[in-house]
Structures are given as structure tokens and as C-alpha cells.
Image (cartoon, rainbow over all chains, first blue to last red; front, side, top):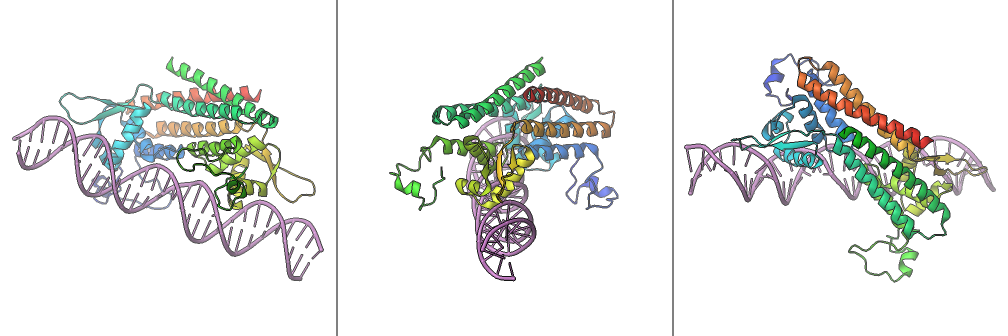
Length: 173
Length: 173
DNA sequence: TAGTTTGTTCATTCTTAACTGAACAAAGAG
DNA sequence: CTCTTTGTTCAGTTAAGAATGAACAAACTA
């Protein structure tokens, strides 16, 4: 359940700490492996690694988890949790939940954590459409080849946007 | 046509160099503006800015363009062109074309430059599916909540993959 | 042969942004 | 009130990777 990088970590030191280094998987625990891989994947998507690890943690442990627990178990600073939790909340992937008589912040996975990813994706594509449209207007009309290529690109993004809007509806049921 | 950042740039110095700084658009030429914006967008997508500018250049100027011309007009090192052109070629967005009796490399936009973007996107999603499947196998069966959340996520990616495969076919006609 | 041109590779520099620790504000608890 | 707990913000550090210049290899010219 723990990252077990610190030397004094009880879970780590009580075990027979077999061959470290090399391509050995850091920990035997498949859940922490999964969480770590989610971090890597997020990084590949251009997102901060910690954000991916947080999502991974929620997938594994579900239910409302408190702020400090996240920082502790993922072994990162509270500052990082704060920033990334806010980002993920803004993205609609996790949400803050209240706990009566508890001052701490609790978070959990949102209803459909992945929908917003698509919405963000759509936003980017619409920005590109905008860019293309403006280019089309401002570039001299006699540059026929250019306008043809712009049109081709616009067609692509139009189709892609439609496709993803359809997907979005499909996932919303 | 040029970046005109260097002081000795003829195009720059012959004009009445009006108010620099502020939000002023660097150049009046809408085509270089477009190329620059493509660079910015690429950057936002996690791709190198030069890659985006190269694509922008091809959209504007079409036809086979030689290696050295790219370096010159985009005002970047040949090394950058080399690296990015290779990446874009691997991605299937541009392609090398031969010119009889010419030793230089020429490039042009590929048939459907954007299809491969989707394929790359699909690859990433399939990698995630793989990750999810492996996690599902390795995580203890009695963690019911975890498996449920994994299943939900898998469902999402399955739907998304299908949707994008459909889109791909649609664009291939 | 030596000299040019063209593209790639490598080591280095530079930029961007992730991450951290520390200072801070807000909200209890005593 | 003081002392603790909790989360945010900010300045500084660090790490990743984009871009470069120089060295190099390959292919042609003379």
C-alpha cells in the first residue's frame, strides 16, 4: 500500500528486500505498480505525473480519501496534492466531498471521470478550427493551394469533432 | 516569410518597425502568423514547437520543399529540421520525395496528414487498455470495488477506441 | 586525390514546468 | 488568547526535453 522508498518504512524493512536495481519491479504489490503506471501514462499525455498517480490511487482505493492521506501514501508534498487535486477537480475527474464534523478535505472519483477528458480534447480541436478559420479569412484569396489545404484540414477537424461529440453523448447515455 | 527577429534582417529593418512589444502581432503577414500559431498549438499538444511550424509551413506553401529551405525560412538549425522531419515522417504526416538529379531531401505533406494523429491517439488508448487488463489480472479478486472501477474505466476506453476506429474508417473513405 | 554539399548525431545550452519547503491564512481545540 | 491542524500560495530548485552548434559521414564534383 505504500511507496516504500524511505529507509525507515516498516513495510519495506521487514521484508527480505530482494534484488533491487535492474529491471526489477519496485514492489510486489500490484496496486502500487498500477498507480505508478498511471503516473507514467499521465506523463506521456503531457499531464503531471502526480495527477495520474492520484487517479490511480482513487481507482484502487475508491471511496472518499482525505487530503493528508493522499500526500502520505503517495509520498509527495502537500503542495503537490493541493495543486493537482485542484486541477483534477477543475477537470471534473475527482470531486470534493464533505464530512460532517471533519475539517479535512475529502475527495473521490467523479461520476464519470473520463467524460471531461473528451471535453477538454474537444476544446482543443475547436481552438484549432478557430485558428483555421481565421487563417482562411486573412490569407490572400489568390493563394489557391493554401486555401485548398486549409479546407482539407478543416474538414478533418469537423469530422473529428462530430465524432467525439457523438462519443460524448454515447457515454452520457 | 521570415521570422525577422535578427536585427540585420532586411525585411524587418526596411519597414517602419511600428510599436513592438505589447500584444502586437509580430508580423503583418497572415501566413507567418498562421505558421507561428501552428507552432504554439503543437506545443500545447505536447509536441515540439518546430514540428508544428513545419506542418504550418507545408500547409501554406504546399509542394515539395527542400530541407535547407525549411531551415532557412523557419530560422532554425538544420539539426532541428532533421530531427523533427524524421519524427513527422515516422508519424506519417509528411513524406520524403525524390527529385531526379538532386541530392537534397524534399518533403511534402502526406496524403492524409491527420489520419496518423488518430492512429497515434488510438495506440495510447490501447496501451491504457493493456495496463487496465494487466491490473485486473494481478490485483486480488477480493478487492471488489477496485475491480468495479477498473471495469468502468475499461468500458470507457473500449467505447472510445471503437469510436475512433469508426472515425478513422470514415476519414479513409 | 582534395574540396563541397547535405543530412545525421552528439554534447551542451536553454526553457519550461513539475515539485518542493516554508511562510501564510483559516478554522478549531484548549 | 495560544497552540494545533489543514490547505493554499509563493519563491526556489530540479528535472525533462527542445533547440543548437560542431563534429561527423556519405555522396557528389572537379
